[in-house]
Image (tube, rainbow, N blue to C red; front, side, top):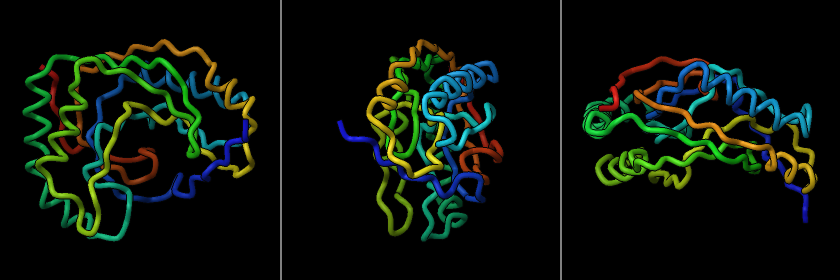
Amino acid sequence: MNPLLPIVDTLYGKPCLAIHVQPQLAPDAQEKLHALQQAAIAHWPRAFHEAPPHAFHVTVYPLVPTTDGFDKEAYWSMIAEPARRLVEELGSGAGPLVLDFFELKVMPVGVIAVAREESGLIGRIRDRILATLPPPPGHEHRHYDLVHTTLARFSDPSPVPAAVVQRIEAVPVALPVRIERLKIFRETLFPCLVGEELASVSLG
């Protein structure tokens, strides 16, 4: 097998502006994800940016993506109210959900933990956003087919041997995380190292 060729994350730790729909992860869940991060990167040390526990998040959908090239404040002003109503409608009509993290994957950008979400709420929110909100000017909507959190992002472009990829992906994962609240989060330091909650809805 060929080695993996990393894509170095050049945005890590830098100011940005993005607004996401996210499930609220409790601190104990973030600590457990941090333990998974440490177990994974131990197989290829000094090759990753290591986010602290408080920054771990799951993106349901980036309402305003990190991508530049358009007036983000103007775009958010246009979609803010319909986005809030959408999240409130779908969230309040659903019960608490479980993100069942079950495996690690090594991607060109870093290591992700993949989760199952059996209720389908995340998929319904994504579909409604695609169907009802306009994309950013000059851009197309993003299409997501995974529920995941990024545990570590590459900081070193050195090729990663296939055997190392296999060892990382063999790290056992069995982490169910109960979610009782969704939030809209404004990110100002990538990746969600700093930001503020703009709105939230309790599930059910």
